[in-house]
Image (cartoon, rainbow, N blue to C red; front, side):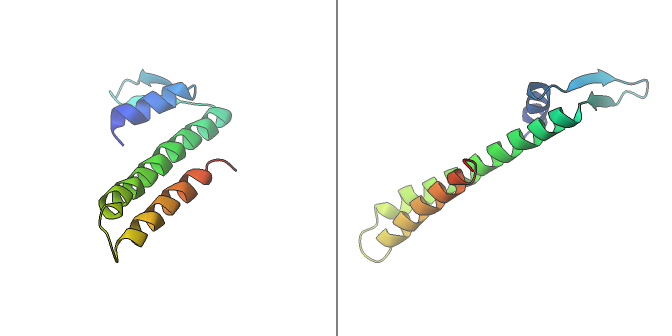
Amino acid sequence: MTNDEIIKMAKQAGGRFSRNPDKYDVMEITYCGLEAFAKLIVEKEREACAEICDGFYLSWIDIQGRYEFMGEGASECAGAIRARGQG
């Protein structure tokens, strides 16, 4: 995740950025905003992990024989990772 992506999500969660006299960026966010920010980060990371599994699926499903079942397993893993965000 890039700094720009993190800042974008923090702003999306209600964070406000300012510069203090020491030239450091300061983010102010409420507790509720912090919770929303954490959820956005977790959601993005979860999807990144599921996409890795999708990539394995695409790599392995085309290989006939002993590796084909691994593609099916990778697809199941991607679904399980995404399902964690549903409950």
